[in-house]
Image (cartoon, rainbow over all chains, first blue to last red):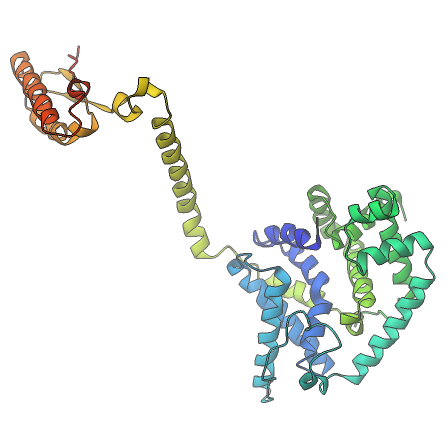
Length: 193
Length: 199
């Protein structure tokens, strides 16, 4: 089972008009989409507006989503188009070439777009990275291993269970507890706007 | 935190990783409406994940989900007209295709009707009711269908037993001649029309 299978489960419900399932997808992908849009638009408030617009467009277009691509890929395209349209509407020139989807959400991006990176974002990103690192270091060994294998190595629960020689239920519990610890450690930086 | 809440939150964490069962997901979606804290917990888990990855760390403190949720709730969508119109047609088409495949598959199964293709052995019959109330069942073998297809209109006018006998002999003779003049003349009588008198 993978994150994509969760998306599929949620999408089935969304296509039947279940807005709660769509809400979970928004919660899941909003930060990645914000990061993508911030490659085009530097103003933080505008990024949030365009992100909101992206998801609303996605909701409206949902009956036409045939599942040929992954949900994130599909929303990514909507986000890029929405961001470009926003720039055109604001009489600003959108970037000449699209960003590769694999690179879109990372900080090491094409030079052409680096100049619109918001220093404020970069600073808060750095602070966040430090806080996460500290919280990770403070975790008990078993929790840190479980969450690292999951988050950074992308292993499934079953694979982690095999690596750690523990039952899947224990792995699941460790990952959850690790996340809770980290959430507490970064709570001062993560405040809803 | 109660055991129940802990279990729910753990399920949310599993959902984040795509490791949540269908049953868990159904239960969570149901509870999301009545328990705002559950949604907030899921939001928190997502923020934590975003913070752990450099890609979106700078945006982990931002949330537009509530605004989207309001807009989405205000504008529910129904499946498109195209989807609504074609779904039943598509279902019927699929069912019909399956039926055709099953019938054709069964017809050409080896060994059916002692080597004679099923289509010949189980050729469809139709009943013709004349003015006198006599009913005939006409067996229609494939090579003979064209000849027999013209029969209903002609037979409908036949009223007496003598006419029926005459018609029967016509059809039998026609079947014989047809078999001599066709490639499948090996079993001419297998395709001869048979008649049953109605009561």
